[in-house]
Length: 241
Image (tube, rainbow, N blue to C red; front, top):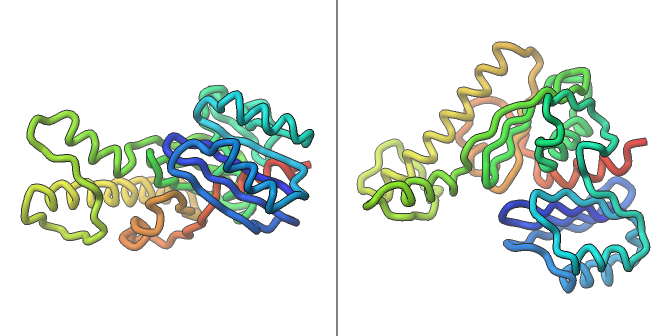
């Protein structure tokens, strides 16, 4: 039984896998604590493998807790053996979350070109070719980051929360910001998909992340929304021979 943990910029995501199946999933809007993990280990006493992806510094208390369990612990890094070939020119700078979603996509869609779009704090685009080679991609601002930037770098624009009631024309300042940010993100995503499709045939588009469901409703291309792709990828990495 495997526990996969993704310490992200704004959330901690946790998944427990039994015989390759995700049997438990949870997420925290902050960094998960020792108490949070104690509850999970009480529910699943047979966990014997931990794999961790982190873009933040993990607390010493959490690391000490896992060490006390005396089970196999893997911290994902550019040195970890992967089910894909990493051809990124600076692998030491590649985010673990990008590696994980790419491995997760390949575990689902084999021997085809894949563009993974992760719609979270940032919108990241990761491309894996039909030889299972990771070539790189793109990094852009996520929706909340765009909203924060408009407020932070201007004197009068308010900070608003995204509203899923999308229109083309905003009728006041708040709706102008909302429609501008979201329509802008959709146009960006569709434009990047269009360019990838021009260059690569038989392209699978896989969308994941917190804003995936909402954005997927408005993207005109055929896509596959896969929830918990980072966790699926971590599990595929730890099970790679």
